[in-house]
Image 1 (spheres, rainbow, N blue to C red):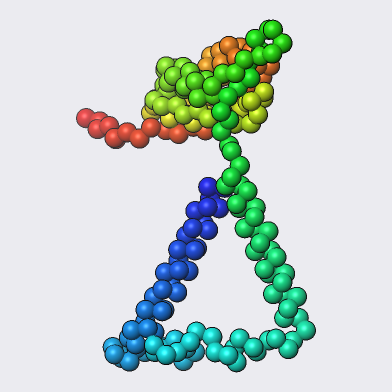
Image 2: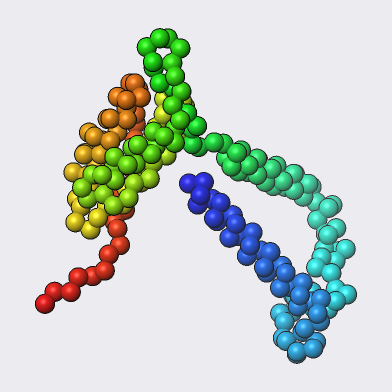
Length: 198
């Protein structure tokens, strides 16, 4: 979800800056007069001395009773959305270590990347799995696995997921001494050339 929001915001910001830059370039280089470009009647930025908003435009709504509440409400919503986006960027998704019950009461720390690597290697060893990507999220005492599998063209998703759960995920859970290891699995099919039939 956050990745989609980032892409949409980046695209909209880029498009807005591109349009604003082109408008400034057209007006600043006096291109409508030089090249005889027909511009819409309401287009105000036609020459190097023109401004985007005239003084009358900037002061037009100040006397209205609804103007300032609307301005402050819009700015408040923008601040809240910006803070949400910033906090979402700073939030760590991947955990660095997993707490393993060592039996002595204090526990031990296992590097999360090591466990991710083991799960990915065991998943890739399964028949029908071309590639596996594993990320551990959540808390170090209650990790969650996000697994991306790229399946071979002949693989069937149902049996592959059941085998992944019974082998790779279960082995990781028992070796780390976890009560449970919830997993979200995303499947993709490997791209392959079309086979020619004679």
